[in-house]
Image 1 (cartoon, one colour):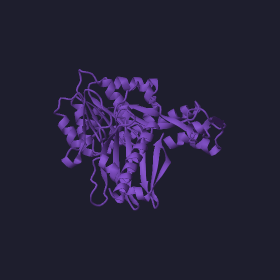
Image 2 (cartoon, rainbow, N blue to C red):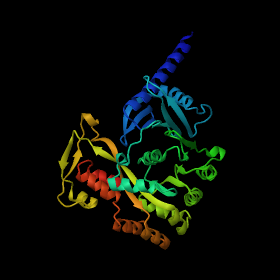
Image 3 (tube, helix red, strand yellow):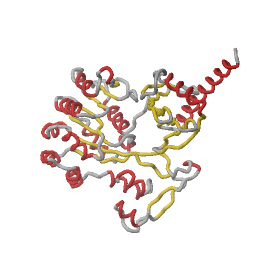
Image 4 (cartoon, rainbow, N blue to C red):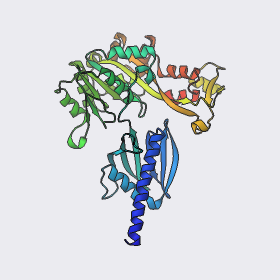
Length: 393
């Protein structure tokens, strides 16, 4: 073997070990996403933990091409041709543990190809509603709603707010031999026994809308739609929920009331919407104060006023320590607002309402808003007042 061949073999070994080490470390540290980002010197590796990114490694320029190629091969991506956006999936096993699934996305930048790997929870035990962060009253309301044989239940919130976990908890509760449950997802992230799960693929014409249309002929009792993105999907989801199926779906809005406005703006007639929609829950993931270094503090008068707290109120925040890697936070938990569709809200839907008008009615009928829940958690010392504003401003 020539010196060049020996060098290539050693480089390949180094790259394999490096990729394995990055993924294994990420899994052991409960990382949600791995970012491998190009710059002038090579690559920077960052881990997202509890919603925050941190730099964990720097990779020299000589390793950029072989490392990128290795990840493409593992993810069954094209390694030839010019850089272009690609998506793939990777299965990874290490240290005798169960196999881990990763969703891989590659996107070209001015310095090279950026790689983001989402670590998927392939198998997960789903707990009760209160483990999601729902209050007892919210849990009871949600539980009673999904007992109904048909209707539309929406979960809303920004990317990374735990919507999928909420949906799968609902599916898990509904999953028994007497029901047919089906899903349309992008991609399939978590597996549930007895649930027929399908990944959409626009390249073959399988979109959320087309897939949902086909599922109406699959004798389904419960349909989960990964996301209502367009008017066609919205129309079919509403029609399905009126004609005998329970439809669970996500939609991107800032709050629960915004979902009603969004669907109306998508062209859903108010009389259809009020017949279909049963409940909307909006959520965020709050970063928990590190209990080891949390301390009492009095926020500035400006912050107190902005958050709607009482003058002179004290709260708690974490300054950062070894146990929390100087981040000041450890772990996250959900906060929710749950909006049932009452007669007053149904009546308001016919009058071209605003988000604020719907929220005003909901609060008058007892709905606890995201801001109210976050303030309660801040007063309990679980989160800082700054976190309240980050979540709800």
